[in-house]
Length: 250
Length: 250
DNA sequence: GAGTGGTCTAGACCACTCA
DNA sequence: GAGTGGTCTAGACCACTCC
Image (cartoon, rainbow over all chains, first blue to last red):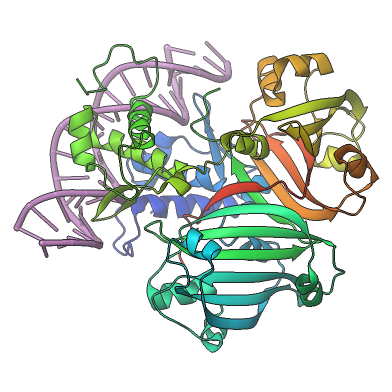
């Protein structure tokens, strides 16, 4: 039976998410040609045993992911593979790499508690000279040093380099230990010349072009808890999907 | 009366959009403190004369815009101004500038029809050597040359530099003339050294760091119709808001 | 326990596309 | 005119937070 609704083991997962997962799987399995039409919302509703609004909720989720798109009066269609391959994620640079089949890694240089500078305290909305955790790392891709990353974190406690090494992921460690979850980031990117520090860590000449990416990361309650500066060598690329603003009316 | 529902002149605008517009206006007018709580969905539903699902649809729209955020069991809250100020738009670089109060402009260098190279024909999904429109421009900010932009467009017809000058916006011109609407873009950014061409147009030394941004722009039916390369000088910054993927479950 | 957001339904009407 | 997505409703139940 195909119906998802009357399935006892629903794992607490919302029905519309299960519907979306089912459709996502069908699409990714290659069952559809690019731009081919899905069953209509009413048909899916009957086939999957969910109301039409629930099916629509699943389709809107897939739309935001870039897997499908809808046109009024025509139908809902499978997005071309190139579009589907792009998904936006918070930790853009490293997750992006994984999707392309590269092996991202990190070398932890320092984990220390330092007093916040005026600039840092400003963006993190704390008083100057309050202690913040400074984490400096080198990002690697297939073993090659491709960038440096320096984070300043306003947290209710501490952790060591060993903790971070064991956890593997900075955000994972912070979520586990402090129940702070990264939901959103404000990013800024630009191109700058490498300084002596960058040059030494990344084995490039001073003055070589470097991609500088700054980020302020926000918790669920929209409190900034991290300021982060990443510097990547020239061969590295950052890729993202950009949607037209829904508010746009011009 | 506050009710939006029984308002004769609804302009064909959906009710949930009008509800969102009303709330957006209240929020932007500064009527709320940062992180203060909005009325509950049930109260808003009563006050505005819309069903609760319609109010929720408006709130989800504002959530995606970054204006509010919701927490189960607690309420819906106004996002801090720094988060609200960030809105994602398709033509990121120039719209972004406008929001910051800078005056963006352009100098049109060339508008010509050229045969597509193999690389261009690949991304635009056309046969090699089919004619494409090449548009090269200089982007300015407050009169200063801050970047170059070279677009290759697969279109069903032509236009002249004068047409573009008159229209002001490339996407506006294409929408008016060919009914092709940009809905989505796949972007890639990196840092490179300036070549002789960049150096001459942007008045910087050869080898200076330049922000290279490539984009493939898609129409409503997810057909790629533009490949675009933008090169910005070091002082320019690109800013965006990044959401955690809704699919994420780790 | 009261109040909040999260999900879900069954049915209705509208706007649009396409034959 | 048949079929599609877009919107909207009234009501229901659940999961969660906070007192």
